[in-house]
Length: 231
Length: 231
DNA sequence: AAAAGGTGTTAAGAAAGCGTTAGGAATGTC
DNA sequence: GACATTCCTAACGCTTTCTTAACACCTTTT
Image 1 (spheres, rainbow over the protein chains, first blue to last red):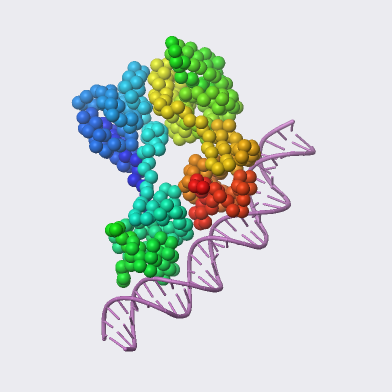
Image 2 (image 1 turned 30 degrees about the vertical axis):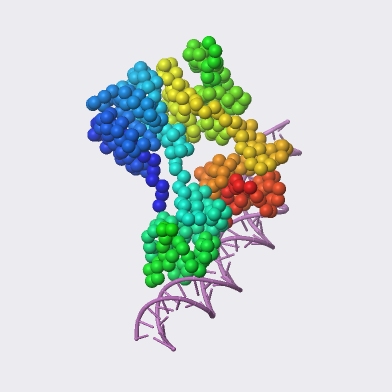
């Protein structure tokens, strides 16, 4: 379980370069989108709002500089230009058109990745959406590791919190006892179904209005438990 | 001729390079500030809050990377590194330390100026806010590295300060022990959770009203610590 | 209606984690 | 080299959390 990596859009027409970059990006945990033409690139950028764009200047259908200009008409998404042209004039033009960085081919993978990280820092704060789960009177801030019930903070022990967030991750679906024991207590042995009953009781007392008649933390007899989503 | 140009701080020890850059910058309408050492650079940055910093990595008194790290402790001022070292590793290290761009000597004036314009675009719109964190009786000036409790300055050792500002950077969120140890003591081995307990005790004694019943420096048993923002 | 299986509840002991103190080692300063 | 500061480490008592057991309950089956 991990948050999906930032989304990178690659606009590049050479198949070889695309393959190389795809491997580098995916290997580093980024989600990945590619376009072979400027038009397609602009279209994908509009639809998916990537967190950063890698742009080759030598595109078949339009000048790379126009792509940057058009993009800057509505967006501040960081753009890293990748180009075979290493002339100073090319760099200056691209940067002044709105690009955030300029890399001359050939370049090293590690440098590219480092410059992508810089770009993501810039687009940064709002790029990382804060994952907050809300349901009824509950509000769970996964980033802060904080649980609120009607605005009041409720303290959960590590196991309680882990059990609760496991149910949240599978919200709406039944989670079998076996699965819960594995995800919360770890694969190792010793975990008994009794633990679940004890900790579900504690969770219900801390979170439910009527712990004996749970509205959300439901038991599925013989199977497991589920976080019930309907109101 | 009304608004003064943006202020650029140059940190560089070679006289020849300084002269060259001074001419380039002043000729382009920038105001200009220079330092020959890392210490002086940090000091000038604190006092004058330049709009961008040009930093040579090869300084006589301290490692250029440390300059970046120290600066990033309180400021987001754009930093363009200028270096004779062109190794990929050097670039990656500098960028990951918090630099925004990396130029290898020799470079063209026009490219440098274009990259400065990019940097200014980034730092641009929002006027750099005073990097001061306040909470309850506390007032922390990240730039001056000064901590006040009810107006009285409180002295923190380097580790105490680092631990405290790490919690401030993640204010409101739980920071795991592992994360704290990594960020404060550095990735290297040897860091034990015991350190955290000792230094949290010291911080609480220096900062909290009732060190044994902390209001802000809270423990999350089994997980880590958090700087609690609510009252 | 009794029995059986699974579930809920409570409490207490065991284990793990935390706060605190203090002394010696390491580091830096003059 | 002497001093001051800061850092690391160990020991001890305390708090929180986890585990375990005993028993009550509820539902379905026979």
